[in-house]
Length: 457
Image 1: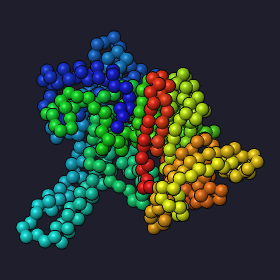
Image 2 (image 1 turned 30 degrees about the vertical axis):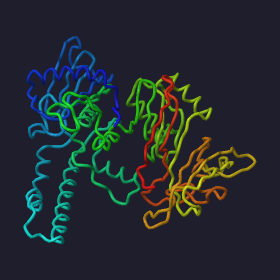
Image 3 (image 1 turned 180 degrees about the horizontal axis):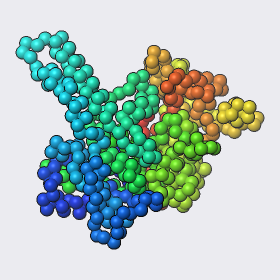
């Protein structure tokens, strides 16, 4: 995954730590990833020691370790366990209690090992039953282990794997929750960020490097971004957003369904992409958004960190120079051959008596132009549905939802559309902005981003 914070400053401190490892640090025999997070203290928490001191270290296995260099608070972490220990003095603590973890593993450990041994003259049916029982016990152990993990998010709220699994289930439109990959939460990055957010620190630079014997994937002392396999699940939960790209001028994120793009009216509508980005990056301008997605729609958004980039991107959207593609799943069968293409030019306006609904109006409506392409018909939870690709050439409110549901369009609403169709309990709108292409406001490079939807299409 893309590194969520700039890495330059953290790499300076990482190289200092590498020198310590080379000089015989107690963890110099460790094989794995180390992480460095550089933070500032929040204004409401005073530095507890003289900022003029070269290095001040406060270590506590339970509270973590903070190394202060002037105004910088530097945190260190390692991935997984070190010499069978979750916690080592001088490094931020694990997200799980070691004793409780060990107890959860012991319950089924003996039986799992016995089931892993292959008996002589085992039949195919016996092997199938043995594998099924072993997998069931492994999943039971994993569920027990993940019930022990807790972490602090950027908004200072507490979360856990139960909440994370429920969100993944919602966004993927699955009927049952899926177990997260083994080791999720044990990497350096989630440890570092959870510690920082729980101790009122503001991260501004982070990096990770591999230390130890080279393998097919990792080189000794080389820097790497957080892993996709595990951190790709937990970091968006901790940060509040999934970051696909970030530099000094812009950030591209994958918005989840159910999250507002921009703040609404009232205190209950302030949690949104814009405010989450501003919370993570305090240097961001007050109004970074240059376009929006409906709250129920997921997908790609670009935001600007500075005023000039904001003006440039806004002009690109206004001139139609930004190219977007959406994936939608229609709640029914679109009776045209697969790969059939077409275009809708439909006029809609706000239904003032039924906000925020839009209604078709040839006289007073604003024209929305949408190219479309049928992909395929398939079964979803026992029902026939149709996946389509939408390319909006204008940016009208609810344009794609109306192109689907209106009798002047497909006359088939999108699955999970609570405004123009039907939404089952716990279901989301199956509409996703999966492609975004624009010109970088500073470098002039053409930027292209693709993000597949979590749901089947």
